[in-house]
Image: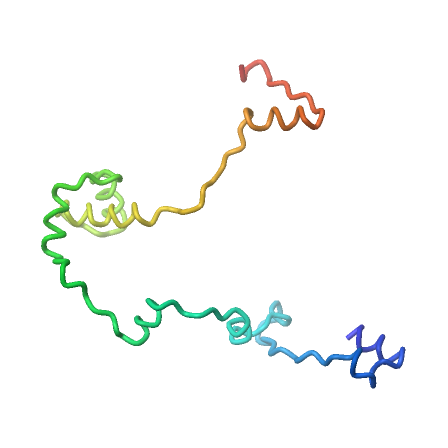
Length: 149
């Protein structure tokens, strides 16, 4: 709005090479806190990405089950599998959520699924070993209290 007023005052409104009309966006007006929030359809239009072939096949229903995988064999092989998350821990959390299952293979399958859901980003921890040389580089003396030695 301020740009339109500036251009109108300086006579640049009629000159097409300086003035470009910006299309108005739909605005959600049903909540007072979201008056300047663009509608969901506008946001989705702005961030559209091409679908992968797997996503296209899921939408079209072209997926076929692999013929070499037998679910019964998979569940039976879970008896020999040693999970990363112990069975007792998995069973405890399953019981605390209201899922009472006495079959340890089901608990192992759930534990296997949770193991595979792990985060892919690495979280770093700032320690004194890292912080001390950086502070010295900037001329800051870093002395640990006597109880930290």
